[in-house]
Amino acid sequence: MVNPVRVSVAIITYNQKEFIQECIESVLNQDYPNIEIVVADDGSSDGTQGIVKEYASKYPDKFVCKLSENNKGITKNSNLAHFACTGKYIAWMGGDDIMLPGKIKKQVEHMENHPECSVCYHNLEVFDSDTGDLMFYSNDLNRHFEGKMRIPARYGTFNGACSTMVRRADTPPGGFDERILIASDWLYWVETLANGAEIQYIDEVLARYRRHKNSVTNRNIDENFTDHFLSSLIMLNKYPQLRKDVYYRMSRKYRQYAKYRKEDYIKFLFISMKFSFYYKNIISILLYYLSFKKVRI
Image 1 (cartoon, rainbow, N blue to C red):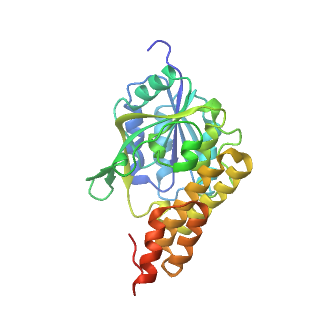
Image 2 (image 1 turned 45 degrees about the vertical axis):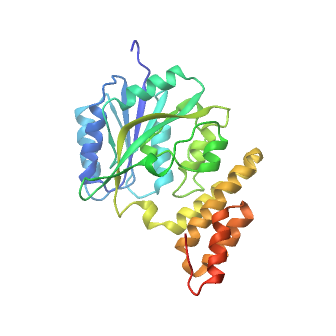
Image 3 (image 1 turned 30 degrees about the vertical axis):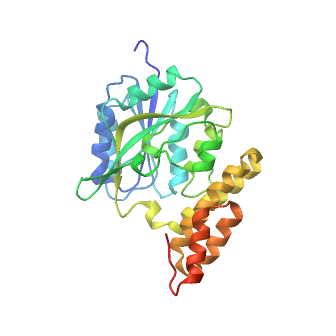
């Protein structure tokens, strides 16, 4: 590749001392020459920042460090990385994720050959953090989607963050919306496509995503749901043309939440039905009233 464009690898970290070295090494081992590594650490207290500083000292031309003294939260920390990136493209990853060989080169080639593409993602190997064993591939659970902004508005964050590369010039001017405390990436992906660009898929496994009990999503189900609801309201206000797609997404989210909030199971199924018809809700409601126990399918 002649005069390769600059790629910013944005690594978001918080107390990931035991994983951050493997993460950084997987980026340094990429066969792509023009990379800057932007590490935003959210006030780690376990020694993560010390490891990052060692790498920055060893590779001063490659590293940009945004190391907070205090914990600011995921969204604000993500913005520290976002606004420090200078590359034409940004490749996102967590401090416990791992790039596989060829990832950056293949994504850059795809996006350079498809100027209509502003969000590019690929399949992921999801593995158990404790054992290292493969659990599944991300697209075993969800078939991949491609298209314009209504696609992520409708189907949510089907693209894993560590699989995603974005065209920086098309990202939201304000970066991640800081009103959304945790799950701010959904709105970020949607708004990156607001100018008519597309999200496109590469059918290869190019990264490994670590699954463990301490993930923020697992710890904060209520906050995650609240963030999705707020994101929906923002989309409906800014992009009324997405109304049907956002309603479809909220219908699915309420159904998911119903399984978590057992005491309000039937209530949330009915709310789900108000947003969008879903035949499984009808079946679940019928079974609920026909049986002595709450039955979920």
